[in-house]
Image 1 (tube, rainbow, N blue to C red):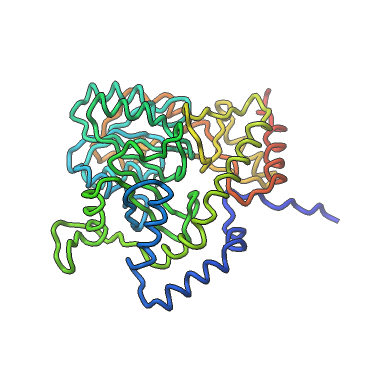
Image 2: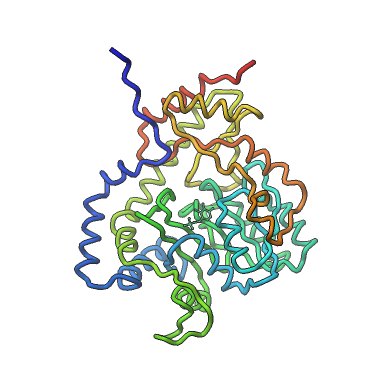
Length: 380
Ligand SMILES: *Cc1c(COP(=O)(O)O)cnc(C)c1O
């Protein structure tokens, strides 16, 4: 009799999600099919309205991805070829890709101990590069950056703020919703995100009527009226299917999922007892939604730690192993690196993300904890 392997603890569990929401997804699909309208229709409008109401943004514009939402946000802020945009080197590549796709120039500033953009260094960089057109910080890991500090920085320098909230829908900073100090902010509904669609989708959020109008035009070839094209737009239309599924099957569960993520994060924090693993702090005032649960491993031992997790059938990830400024794709693209990005590099070298999704049971979390706590780096 061989020992049965324990079931894997996954980084994401879309099969468990289907068990929970499948019937409602199928209802949404039927509703769209029966309506006879498939792209940019009533379902998209209703999803946008529901999302606007809960996020307290005046307008939500549904688009095809988080990347497109960022690109459109930058365009509505007037960012174009040669314009500098300050951002973080620790993020999904899409944050910088949106800047580069416009021919603009990313300016990379180091992160702080939280792993998110260091707003003090960002302020110094903006004073040294006053021509910088916009700042695009990322609410990484589901944390909210300090919005009071971000707002002061914007007031002091006059820079336009846009926020990448792809990982942090519903996160708050001292009660203020992410996005509230921006001209426009972007979120992603990529399946792994806190509000994940069954495919690709994203949205731009804004309180500015003009920005919303322009974004609606840009997502649809730059049309201002049927077959009338005021400028060169893109095809970033949102499908009725995605909007319908998001609105009636997934959005109603977002608050409960966020509460579950918070409970899991607390259980991890309370239970982690290993001097070789540390949990980076959240920014001051952050009411986090825990898209990810990052830990930092003692330098030089990350690979061994991940192998240990794998042997115990515990999933893990790295967010992110290569700084964006070090990516090969950046070699031919104009960009600015401020300082030596020391803290960002330590995240790239030592970060590991533990399993974090709303379908984890307490027993799963306890198994992850026991696996973490029993681990010792070789030679210690
Ligand atoms: C996922 C993500 C994006 C891009 O979203 P897509 O929908 O995949 O295009 C941008 N920024 C961050 C921080 C992300 O996590």
